[in-house]
Length: 298
Image (cartoon, helix red, strand yellow):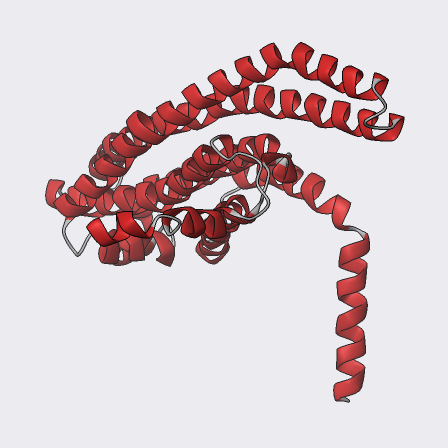
């Protein structure tokens, strides 16, 4: 019986591997339904947890690559992650604004993940949660996103400006017999891929900046709209409305901005990454410990 179960599981994994090219199109089409159809709180919890896990996977991948071209799909992935996060914001906003229908269980109307972030991360205090959310927005928008955008612009410009010189160097090596035609073709492809990558990153970084602005606007809409709907439609008191909708909005803001913060860090890491023989962790430790005298003085 156990052997049959293992065989069946292996077949399912093989089928999933064979049809992996269908995963992204299906997920893209599903975003439309997530944005238009009210989702149950259980499914919303799964999607929010998947968003957090996906952001962690992206950051770890950027740390372990030895060259930005090893993760050349990152600009498209950055756009997809931003759109997925905004779609989740639309879905959670619908649940938050209809929280008054839940009565006593209004604080869990948007799912247990948002409720947990509103309680645990905020330390049970709405003011603490709001301050943490504002700090995350400021760090992401002013520091990381702005820096990554500027680095992407400079990298794209210098890569394009340096293409003619690199092409001439390849032609000179080929004419001198130092490399063969296949190696010259490979080097030209690398140069073209670098230009395409940094050019795409220059544009994709604008989505991260816009996402930070959208996060602030969505937060204001959730609070103001929630207070108005709660008092006018559900006859909730001011104190009850403020406690419920502010708590849900802070939880939603944190659970969406933390993955955005991680993705922004990943974008900054990959545009500042130079080609090396080892990953970022090994290179960082080896270079920091390469001068023992500096460690002794410190």
